[in-house]
Image (cartoon, rainbow, N blue to C red):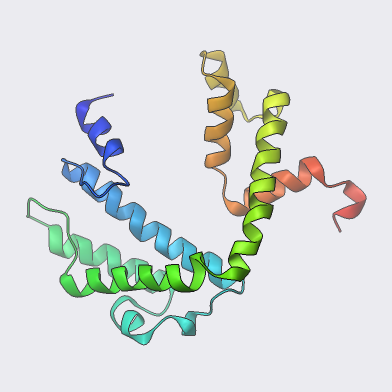
Length: 183
């Protein structure tokens, strides 16, 4: 890996900032994606309703996932074009940071969501153990990685890490729930 890629990885989730514009845009893009994905998940999970999000954030960012993504992405582009930095306007950045605090207080630490955490750990652990014992069930891309000499444990971790929540539940159901119990 190049120095730039290693720097981007090293500084992706720390208080430090990647050195390159590419690393900075990836880091910021992930923050934008994660917060909106988490809001969407919380709404689908019944932990949050769109109208629960404080107006001071929705007035700036939008009242839907699509609206927030549109605002955030366009704001980064407008405030970064022809500049040696990747940035948002102060107003949008403050609203996103406030929304993040709101999510910690109302979703990430919410007892309803936390009680599901053990089930998710159980599901991921079982999927991991299943694929370690049955690597033939891994998809073709993962099989090719194994043929190239990649460690089975790493290939399984990478595969599971790339699953959406819905896909992980589907695979868990496929491997661990008897057919007659699925309906």
